[in-house]
Structures are given as C-alpha cells and as structure tokens.
Length: 106
Image (cartoon, rainbow, N blue to C red; front, side, top):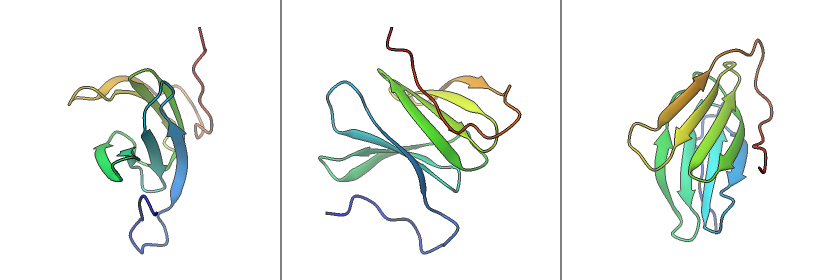
C-alpha cells in the first residue's frame, strides 16, 4: 500500500525519512521542496505539515516529541510536534547544507 505520493513535479522528491523512536506508527518525511510532513502509517494519512525551511530538508531526527530537521538552507530546526506553534528552536550557524542529524542517547 502506498503511503504518500508527491505532485508530478519532477523537482520534488523525498529527501529524508525518520521513524519516531518510542513505539508508535509515526513517520517524518522531508522533501526537496522544503516540506516536513508527519504521517500516521497505521491510519495511512498525513497528520500535519511543519514549515520553517526554505530549501530541501535532508536530515531528520527524533528525540521523544521533538523532531529536528536540517536543510540545504543551512538551518537546524527543533519542532515540538505536540503544539501548534511547533518551532521551539532554530540554529543558523552552519555555512553549508545540513546533511545528517542524530540525538545523543543520554
């Protein structure tokens, strides 16, 4: 069963994915057109879209209810997925694209 599809625009593609860590069926998807989407895989539907990037989202990492995204726009953004105003932190200190993210297990 297909979970999602992007518009027929060839410039858009899935550029990052990350499963929530602590049991659950939520998947975060980053796209080439600066979108971060949250999906409930069991229900087969998109829960919400998180804005904040102006270019490709190439890295995603979960830490409990926080989803961190990194992009070609040199930004790292912390999203609290429980609240409407989801951006709780924004770091703009990189000089190139953020290609990878990971939270320390402790």
